[in-house]
Figure 1 (cartoon, rainbow, N blue to C red):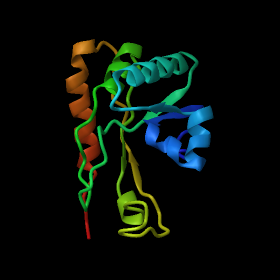
Figure 2: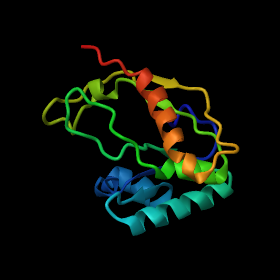
Figure 3: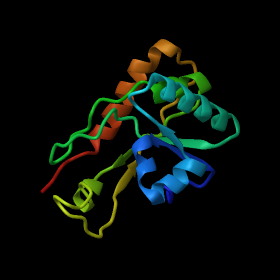
Figure 4: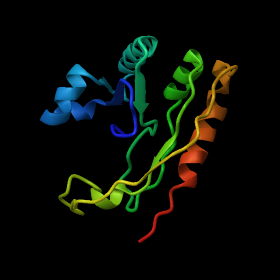
Length: 156
């Protein structure tokens, strides 16, 4: 993702990344951690994200509510927050499908191992949000989900 973007960006990601000393460094200084189990944490994280959007920064948000244990993985349902945020700020969403990272590093390396490899991404055409209202978030979420899942073809 870092190579695909050319302007100032930040990640909004799960606070579990604070447990790793390397990712914690970024998440404490640049990125925004979110505890998905806490409505207060989510509110604060999205407030900070809104502020950064107003400063011209680009958020990178992985909208899945969880990363499951299924092998091969499946695309889980998305949370509504990122779509409400895009509608509120009337900014387009650029869906990105990352197709095979799970083949390179499925877990922490203990069960399935990790290996070097090339991460293939598909950057979809932007989905505009101009004119959408807050209650259009479900429709927008489905559009993004369908675009991302259209490029996933788990091959062995």
